[in-house]
Image 1 (spheres, rainbow, N blue to C red):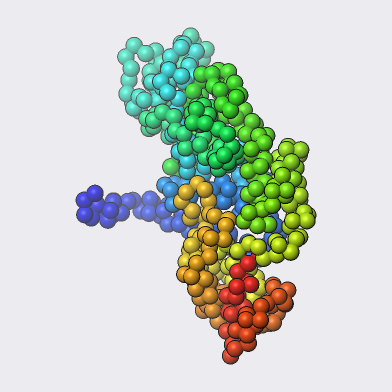
Image 2 (image 1 turned 60 degrees about the vertical axis):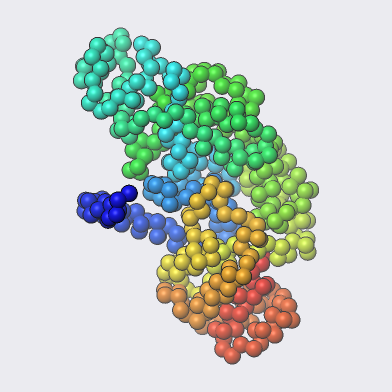
Length: 445
């Protein structure tokens, strides 16, 4: 890249393009704020925990290309409605979501030569996908510009019939990204018993699951001309040719009912609610509930939070709060009134957890070691000081809350002697509140 080329590119943008980019940034700013404000103030706290859990499980990264323009509908339409429903419904909504299709590149996944679904005259429609807009094909009765009567023999979809996004797309062959993460991260787990051959076969099943106008906020579409129409065998399931979109649906059906999926999800949910290394007996019962109820997430969560393990003394404060948990609980416990969520979002960035900012598809870690280090604890204390002293713009501390209220209501009065002694040396109420929010006890849940 030549010096100044970036600035030159910016200067070449039209006013309309610059306005559209500003609008996208505003939407992302508002989305990140609503995430932390919902976590702090929602009356439906368990639902917000589950929205965060499932978004993280099906993570997409706002910084990848145009993924950010799909984030609002992704969380609103694919994640939030299904957090307590059937896992198969959630899995299907995510599979068809523009955000996931773009993030893991499945919108570009096309059948290898000779395997795409053919038109009525036997023509390979990938030839149409390769043809540039306006390019003619002499001798082809289906070339653009040739008028055909409805039902005329040989009438076959051509470049002009494709969505505009596909007209400018050169097929790149199969993309295995989504197929791999679907099994490794979304369902079976890394030890779920699948092979590289299974990854390839699943990728074939999802070829043609694409987008209209992918870089302009388009929608899901199944494009038969990009789909691998051959026989497939994935995880022991034989999928005969000719199924079209149903090929991918059958893979989702299989994965949603698989015992490895039940165990993988039961482990992750038990880790979120109980301990970094949850008891095997609890995981076994949660997985059994998943299989018995056809993947009913509500019943799996019920099994976990009503279990003896959840209520056991060993589970008390066994988990370290993530940055989102910490920021939201600090705002809630202190009674602060946040009319501006940007300082809270900035705090999460400084704590290492920018909303929608996890680049790898693994999502943010749910283990203590990811969040416990000297720098992170110092940043948490700095946030506690800024929050309690009114130094966060748009966030007003409560005049009716003091350190005793927080200790009683948020910590159940349970503090170590050393923590009590430290708080007792505070000379002002804001200082004492900051010491409570920054205490070792407040970092755990």
